[in-house]
Length: 234
Image: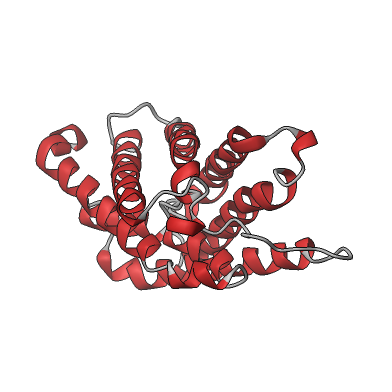
């Protein structure tokens, strides 16, 4: 007998909490102090480590999605039942919102604290490098498509057993190294939603892109997999 729905939802909530708290926390807390020296590379590694550790901790229970776009992509790729999508997405969003709420309480827990961008995602004036809408849309679509392909490949039946979490975590690290200057990196609608609720208002105004682009990218990745690589999954 496999895990119950409640166990799967709990694993997804906890995993997404950890991803959002660990990744965004490194950006909001540690990266705010240049003398600590973690910079973009440290934040990128933090996001990768949260997925890597979460995949091994919670993956055996829920599959370790921690991302609505990944859940959609896996459903389209034939690896996940579409009927389970609503429960997963709700759990993921709740986990990200809870993590952002706890992080907000910590960040504001000292005199004169300023929330700043609060690790939110954005384009135009809200992009770390000033990149516009189309650049943000394109990089989020492309990188989420690649992320989905890596997930499908690393967890295929013929893939080396036990190494999927490592490949997926390192892929997310690389994704952040590429795209933090453009959008502050989303590729995950839940991760974007949590901080947006506590950050500057412009983050909520631009949140739509960080739902649309990752889901479109995941769908493209799933289509590429099913069209060109599905035999590898047999």
